[in-house]
Image (tube, rainbow, N blue to C red):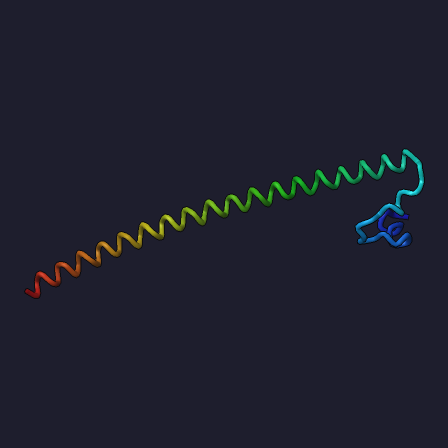
Length: 92
């Protein structure tokens, strides 16, 4: 019987309190359960680290694109202003 099947039979599947799963005092069973939990925790922490790195990379890309956008907008605005100045001088 797998761990999930056992949890469904006992009634602890998707429950916060899982004390009913650990009624036996068998140290080997408890050690196996703890080792399995730590393996899952390490796997999840590694996946979270990868996601955090991807999010940080996306934040960097977004910041760079914002800087480029502001720079280009400033250049275009300055050129448009100079163009308008020239037009006003020609019209006088």
